[in-house]
Image (tube, rainbow, N blue to C red; front, side):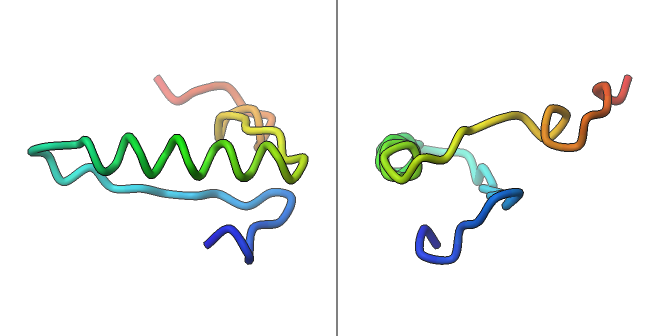
Length: 54
């Protein structure tokens, strides 16, 4: 997944419930690797330049 990341990419991760230990660890790794490659992580609202849906 990280090898195909590019500016403007949206990474969607589904929460299946239950024990989320592996998900949390995967996110830590994913975020760390993306930041080390110079990516800035923003919310979808920030990316699209639109306010959150209410």
